[in-house]
Image (tube, rainbow, N blue to C red; front, side, top):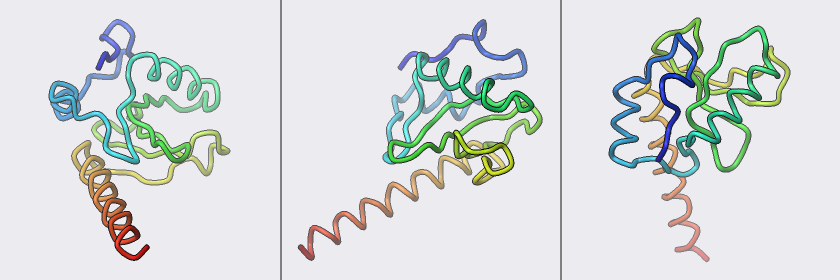
Length: 125
């Protein structure tokens, strides 16, 4: 998967090693979440800047099933914020995670729970 190089990212952003590990290992789609490739990052970055000009977000992941995106924010280094994009600014932050791994762990747990729900539904249908 192609990601933005450092010339295209905001000056304050350095990709965390944990994120780079997922890219290198091609762990990029874990339903309902997926990591954004370069064209989608550009689209989200521009859109977030237009919709929330007072904030400095950089989206790196999105959900398949709704408008939530996982972002880094300049004012909160090391943290991951999950935003409900397209909402008024006072309502956009859905969750905050202390680290990339905290967010990723929650995303994987959600994937497992959905798989369990799907398996149970198939067993009872």
